Image (tube, rainbow, N blue to C red; front, side):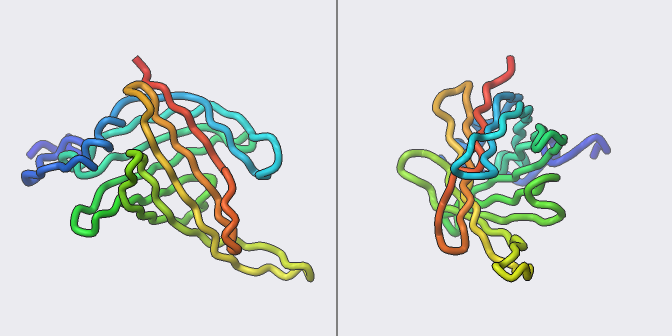
Length: 179
């Protein structure tokens, strides 16, 4: 076997993709577009430009979304690996990045939706100061919704879910296929 292999081109055992995997592979390509990030749900979003490359992994079992942009004026990058677990009937994802996740990895899952959107829920721990100024760790939810309104557009939306259950828009990236 050649040493020039990676998860996008390595030979794999036969794999029979289902309809859910076909949704994922339609995202494959080079993309760019605006990102809006809400640090305060009632405030105006910060705007930046995102560049993304989406590749099929391991014979179509997964896709990897590699992206880079800026947040709060500083460069950041990340990866989101998305697949469909046919045994459990769930989309699954693992997300790492240099801004939101620090040195952590978020794992998310979600059932297929009738509207064709891929919606997955994960969680993270945030440190917050209480009324007395004491730092407390709190578990927050994070919903990621990905959909493709047409062949040349992919929309990634993220929603922050407070420990009390309040869900607010956090990030919206609207990518256009680069030609």
